[in-house]
Amino acid sequence: MAKKIIIVGAGIGGLSAGIYALKAGFEAEIYEKNPLAGGECMGWNRKGYHIDNCIHWLTGTDSNTKLWQVWKTVGAIDENTEYANTHKFYSSRIDGKELTLWNDLKKTEEELIKAAPEDEAEIRKFIQHVEYAKSCAVPSDKPLDMMKIKDYIEMGKDMADMPKVMKEYGKISCSELAKRFKNPVMQKLMCDYLPADYTAYSFLVSYATMASGNGNIPLKGSLAMSLRIAQRFKDLGGILHTNTPVKRIIIEKKRAAGIELEDGTIVKADEVISAVDVDFLYGKLFDRKYMPKDLKKAYENRKAYPITTGFQVAYAIDSNFSGDDTIFFECEPLQIGSLSFKRMSVKSYAYDKSFAPEGKTVLQANIVQSDIDYEFWSSLSAEEYKQKKAELAEELTKRIIKEFPELEGKIELLDCWTPLTYSKYCNAYHGSYMGFVTTVGNKQMRFKGIVKGVSNLFIAGQWVMSPGGLPIALISGKFAVQRILKRDGRSIEI
Ligand SMILES: Cc1cc2nc3c(=O)[nH]c(=O)nc-3n(C[C@H](O)[C@H](O)[C@H](O)COP(=O)(O)OP(=O)(O)OC[C@H]3O[C@@H](n4cnc5c(N)ncnc54)[C@H](O)[C@@H]3O)c2cc1C
Image (cartoon, rainbow, N blue to C red; front, side, top):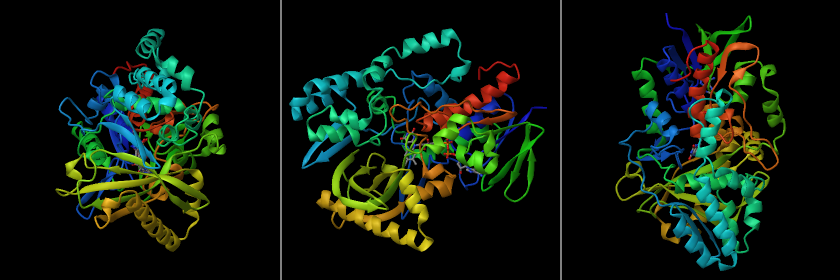
């Protein structure tokens, strides 16, 4: 009889683990606390509109990449997938001037040099290195520690230009990158998208992913993609239990014997894969004493390993508001807890007609938040929290109308959510929707998805490798199954 694998959590990491487990001939059951699979790869409906709340770009949409093959295997995308017809990464505005990072690098270079001739040399260097960064690939075949010399040689060849990017931008932060430019709009453009303390190379890689056509946005959005993956899992014979929170992983004689559900039910298993947030895993589902040292240090050093989350608001716009724009702009200072925010962004979802009734658009605003903001939100009582959200949403609306006066009378609040939303909905650490940020001078967080001392418990999910995100969640599920196969002396080709 086939061995039974239990997977905790039906985010992208858990679903991927489930699908690869079935492909490897195991029985697989996923237990998910929420009514729907998808975790942070999610969207929801309000007043006849769809709020898409994940995919800004999906790394791995280029069918020549190995990652594309993994997305195809899990049913996320295939040769017939339609993508949003977007042309730009984003724009930054300051004092009435606007600069854009177009997917077309030549166009970007020309525009930036025209607007900031004083920065020509730095702009040319930046664009050249974004071109180099297109070679960056997510390892998708097998975990790094299972790679042989020939795999490393092949990876080295594929990513031949990446060392140049690391040399030039690997040891500086986005705010230091900004300081290399003299023009104030250029400076904003360089550190609007990612938090200022992110390493600059991450920013170049993100832009390169968009610019190379390997980071498209599948039409119909994030939830639809999650549901396609969940469907693939079920079609292959997997059992998905939704609305079924797991209370703990049962350890007996140094083995994971199974899980206990919140309602007290015990479910036995041969193998367990946890695909929940790792802080939740090691704090709630399982004893924290098993946590790897590096991970423990990261949780203790919040400055070196910050997280990314956001205060977000969604609006219905009674017009076809500007095509595919994400625009950052200066705003009147907005106080959230102890921090004051002077820049914000809006993103138009006009690129996907399925999100809004005809002639209308969804617009979302985001104020990027981190650990300290999470502390603020969680210090509020239920009543204060509700009030603060409403008050800040109103403040954001005023700032949006000030920047885009054409929206006066055409903008209606749909919903508003905070870092607490992610911690409540997904048990996400401090509401983080990515893994730890890699800051300059600190080691990229990465750990094997195994638990020392418990031979049949494995870990999937975006936290296994910074910066996290969908591709890491995806491959982590596959890798967890490959670790089981390797341990059992079976082929890891799945
Ligand atoms: C606004 C936003 C924008 C983003 N943009 C992008 C982007 O453009 N590109 C990109 O690559 N990534 C993006 N991401 C990140 C991406 O969504 C995440 O990296 C990814 O979805 C994480 O997947 P995961 O499986 O690791 O974790 P999760 O999605 O958190 O899945 C964990 C699952 O475990 C479940 N769970 C938790 N506790 C229990 C329990 N006790 N019992 C049972 N189940 C439990 C949760 O409900 C959840 O379903 C974005 C995220 C957000 C929110």
